[in-house]
Image (cartoon, rainbow, N blue to C red; front, top):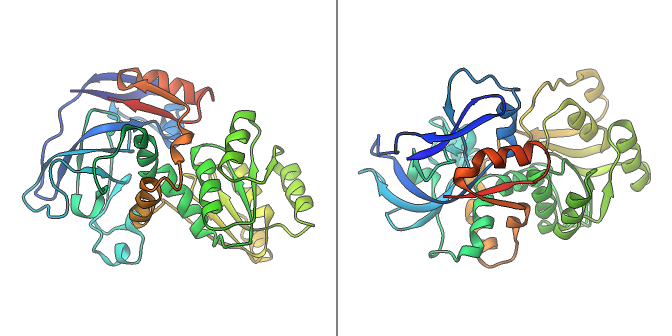
Length: 338
């Protein structure tokens, strides 16, 4: 088969790769119905992460089970399933506590920008949908495998509650779906930090009540002005840079909660500064598997439409064009159809 392989900075190719097969009794192989490019894929694409050799890329998936290993019990061929970017057994102590991305046997999913994908630990990783979904639900179900699950974790980790004020730092797909998640959790006021008109518009559609375009100290001051000098009850950091982390901490009120779900690059925190802020901070790789049953239900019942973050759809063979569009901010998130 052919799939996406990253060779170096800004060098993604659609080329021949081995077709996945069952390697262990706990594996499943799925035929992809849709895949996509993630904002975190742009880190290696831009050269921020070293690429030592040509490497299959992609970690978001949804599709139909083709084959399962002899030990797989909870999914079967013909089912439509959604997974996460980490495989997990869903039985270890960390999984039972709801942190499947820290599973004692976790495996990073890689190579999902392809027609077929091997999924380790299939029983603990894959969640079937109630039936075969209609084509129009595919973007939203695909979003559940990462960006929606990550946005939901951001809101959950920051203790978003009904009636509270929330600030979201970052207007990529994760940030936009963090807005959606905060809305679903009952936040009364949702401040989206964004400098891009198209993303501001979508943020409002998804539930934002206010837009702040400034960054750095000016952005902090604007949110303080909007909240009578207090700051936000919950702040969701969805980027992973020093600027975004500093800004997120700066707008969290004393006693408030800040979550961070953007993969950190070059981030350091000042312990002395944190000591006097009284801010709760929690984050990390989102345990998407924890939320998948709930998210699938919300999508299936058409309560939410996270697929709106896909503003570019291309054939999988055009994967290099998808990367370029996202790198150049001509697209929020690119969906790829095999």
